[in-house]
Image 1: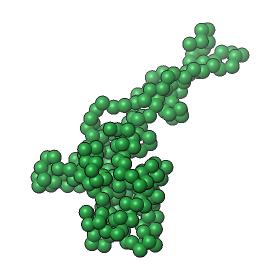
Image 2: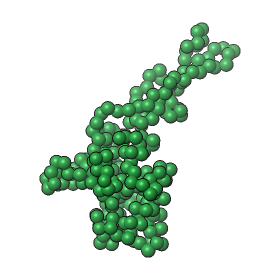
Image 3: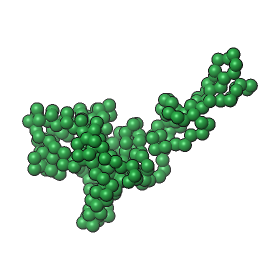
Image 4: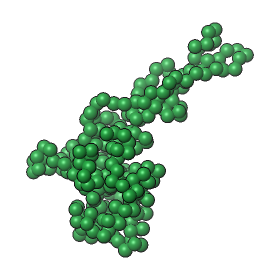
Length: 244
């Protein structure tokens, strides 16, 4: 790169920021790089001269492994994507420390939403949060046995957002499932979830995109920086992340 200078130093970049510990002349991509731009900066020095650096053209990391079981979630725009197409291995799935074993940040956000709902005259609760790989496997097998292989209600083990601890099935009193969606509480959540970082993960009429039937009770935490884009829309996570 610079004739007559010393040995080069390498710094690998993800979205323009240095990847911790990635300083060798080669770098093995991980699931954390999927959906992000990766490049390398090469710096050379010579005695008495100011170091010179050159950064390569960045490349967006993509996967062609449909249905691959990853050791870590498929990540796009900093959002973990776990679905029928992007599954995680049983070894990755771990219980969190929040409500019903779910992710603490998501649990804390739910508490804020629950408090706001109560102030508005509605009571909302979590009927299901985190699920282990074994629990998801049992639910999936039961659904396939009853509804058939193409059922759109339960994901295979490792392919459910419940495995991340970032998805909540909600209820209001005895109103569960579709009854929750029809209830005043369910309608309030559908309108206001984005304020607390949640989205209705499987909107009506989007089965061909999400692979799941309409689920007005299933809400996914993605953080307010992203959820604001879903305000007043039937946008799916796949559409938002450019995965369709």
